[in-house]
Structure formats: C-alpha cells, structure tokens
Amino acid sequence: MSMLLLAAVVCAPARDFKWQRIKMDGSRTGVTPPNADNVEQALGKKTFFGYKAPNGRRFCCGATPKVAEILINAQPKMAAVKEVIAYAPEAMVLQEPESALSDWFVDELMRACEARSGKKVDLGITNFGGVRVDMPQGDVLMDDILSMFPFKNHLCYVELKGKEVRALLEQFASVRWQIVGGARCKVKDGKLVSAEIGGEPLDDKKVYGVATISFLLGGGDDIFVARNAVSLEEYTDLYIIDVMLPYVRSLTAEGKNVEYKTDGRIQYLD
Image 1 (tube, rainbow, N blue to C red):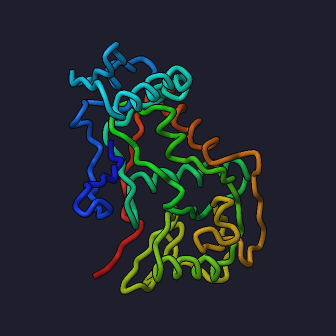
Image 2: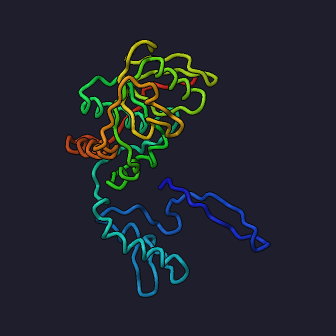
C-alpha cells in the first residue's frame, strides 16, 4: 500500500516527540488490502489469545488485537465494495503536471461529457486534488475507484471563449498546473509558452466546449472555470463516480485492462 503512517517516537522529556513517516508496506504483519473473498489471508484472524497476523506473528495485548478485531468485524458489511471489478497490469501513480492516471481520468470525462451534452468537447479541465488515491497494480476493487473519486462533484459542460481558456492555462502555468485534456501546452519559468487545442493554436476569439466538474465552476482550488462563460450545463444527476465506475466496468466487460499512457501533452521547458 502507498499510504503513509505518521509514527511518534517518545523521547525525554515525556512531552517531547519526534515524528517519522513510515510506509505502510505490511512488513510487521503481512497485512494486505482485502477483497471480499480473502479476508483471513489478507487481514489475519482473531484467536482466543488475541490476534494472529497473516505472516504468523501473534499479538496478545496492546492496541493491535483490538484494532484488528474492528477491521475484521467490519469486512462483511464492506463485502459489496470489495468486489474485484477490473485488472490493472501496472500501477498508475498521480503525478503533476501529467501522468497516466490524470490523462486517463480527464480523457474519459471529456468523452462522457460529449456523449451527455451532444456537443463537441474540445478541452477537459479538472483538478489533481479530486483524485485521492493511485490506481493499484493487479486486481482493482470497487473500493479503489470509490476512494479515487470520493467527492460529490457533477459533470459539467461549459462554453468558453479562447481568451478565457488562455487565462486559465496561464494561471495553471504560474501557480500550479491542473489536469488538462484535449490540449498540448508548453510552460517555461511559470509562463505559458504555447497552447494548442485539437492540433491548432489556441484562438482567443473561438468558443470552445469544455468538460469540467462543478467544484471548479466558481472558485474551488481558486479555479473559476465558469467565469465569463458563454454557456453552462451542470448535470446534477451525474456525479463523477457515476462516470468513472461504469467506465471501469465496461472495460472489463470488453475484456480490456485498466491501463493508459501519457502523451506529452504538458511539457515544462528548461
């Protein structure tokens, strides 16, 4: 697991602490994320004397047996979200300014938005903060996708003039780049050097169709996608998870894995 545990080491005097980040890799217990069918193998089991971890280590006292019991007892209620719904041959790790996971996400938002709106979508804009966990290698659980996109944000279609698109891209270049699809951009020293949409230079006078999320319409992460919009459609019946979860299931139904490659759409120049 790529999650991090913050551990406290007590030093003298008693109220003086030092903090250390430790990767949760199962090295102490052999615990791994469970699915619906391998709870004991993944989490271990309760015993009369306490807790037996998957690697055979036994814990008879302290917090470990109590925490293990809580986790193990919760698994029957979590069985539905522990369903294996896909397979990823490689992990996809979220990275700025571009990664396979972020490209995969925004490209699917664009496709879904175009299908829903019936209009041409030229550009996709969403935020890195909206993707909360990486895509694991191997079996992909429903829980992985639910955890990846946990926020109640709606899919939106916005029409923007090119000059407004340029202002957004310039903001990303100067502050923090966000997830962008449909464009190829070059950035140097905090400035937008060039931008192409659909293989053509960004035209300040042209109106572009933009797929985005409701969180970013009016200032989420200090991003105002709908500012000076020509038109706006917010699909309040369609959360982002309602786009991504069926998409992942459809890949499996078609015999496809969850995988993607970056295409160099965002380049930071030296």
